[in-house]
Length: 113
Image (cartoon, rainbow, N blue to C red):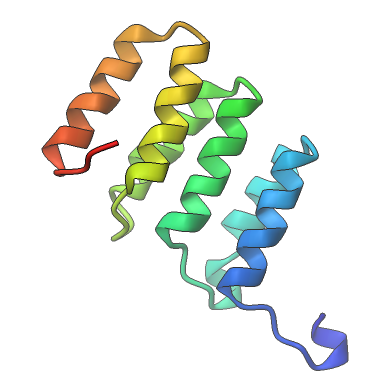
């Protein structure tokens, strides 16, 4: 994109990460996500949620939970979509204890599903 004079923005990277996740290319999606800061792009709740959802759908729940913990340290607050993606993934994989912890965090931050 840069070669044609177009500069990708946060929305562009969100769409790219989402597409990579949907194609099962999670390592590439995460690498792109990790490279955003050096590209001058701030991670936001939407980008985090897209990647969390991709990890959950692929059954990579520990990666999803790690990213969820990270969102709280990077000046982003999870929204109802973030919680729903994570709770859906945990529920589908019978992770009741983990889902309970996420639910408690959801109520702590005043978010409703």
